Amino acid sequence: MEIRRSLSMHASPRRSPFEVLRRLSESGLIAPDTTPEEPVARLEERVAGLLGKPKALFFPSGTMAQQTALRVHAETSGRRAFAGHPQTHLQVWENQGYSAVHGLRFHPVGDRNALMGLPQLRAVGEPLAAVVFELPQRDLGGVLPAWEDLREQTRWVREQGAAAHCDGARLWEAQTGYEASLAQVADLFDTVYVSLYKGLEGARGAVLAGDEVTIAHAAVWRQRLGGAIADAWPLAVLGLLGLDEVLPRMAEFRDHARALAKAINDDGFARTHPVVPQTPMFHVHLPMSPADAERAAQALAEETGVKLLLYTRSNPDPGRCSFEVGVGIGALELSPREVAELIRGLPSRV
Ligand SMILES: Cc1ncc(COP(=O)(O)O)c(C=O)c1O
Image (cartoon, rainbow, N blue to C red; front, top):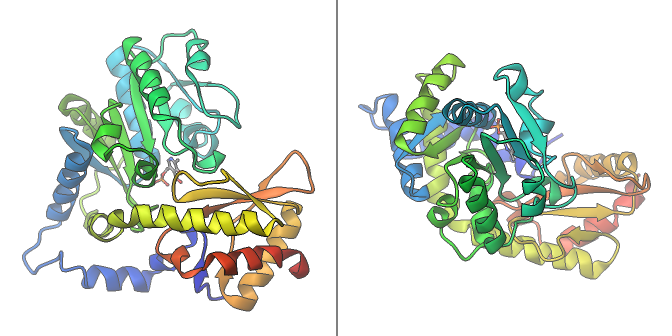
């Protein structure tokens, strides 16, 4: 089955091996005398500059970058516990790596379907090494805390002697929801992780930014974990291409997300959360069971080459489900009207 257009970042046809090779060779970033180290060093410098942090370090994955950041904050503070949203990637997708590999404890803060707030953070009680803030909160439809609320929470965390860490897998996208630069957002945090392959549409990879001492310490753990790979340059080159070509388009993606959401809500068969997307990401809530929605989306993809969704999220009401939309270059090819009509037509494909 050939996927030609997709509403999901993770199904990006841009990540096919052929496309990756083409983009690498046409990047203009690799000359005959380029060493394997150069693109990685350039990427680290560029990300540090964008985030206004003294130092940045490449990691093969965000999973390794974040566990490393937490390990370093734990060793620096002498505390073993950290806190974050109940649906943080660290808790849901990493097989408790923070505990199995690093001996850390996790405090889920607040309701799994709401953003964290200061009252819930204050209720944790145990002195923390770090608090993880995910911007935007993917599992809630890419929503963001209000700027003042985020400032208040991160200030309080740092006053308690804990580090404020940003899970910025989609920080590039999140910035479009604030009237603040990337560096102003990053300034609220001691460490920031960003991804090279989600919004930036690279192949894989991550960068962790922070102060010199923290990043030097993180480099030790990166080596221990096997992440100091010498030939990371293809990932770095694609990351640099993303910063040049895709990062400047984030506001355009957010506007298209808003246009898609409006068409879906106006149509009335499904509804979006949030109603007006804050970032290029939102959820579509369907009056269909997860199994029916997935069967219909599969039939649609086979028939038309359009991938509407990667997977559904279940709902306490078994007759309902939701799926994620992530707008990047690919989703711009789908017009608001076409998307609303494809969603309305799903029940006829079950
Ligand atoms: C919010 C968030 N944090 C962290 C990660 C981990 O990134 P990686 O896949 O590079 O390990 C992901 C990946 O999907 C994510 O969505």
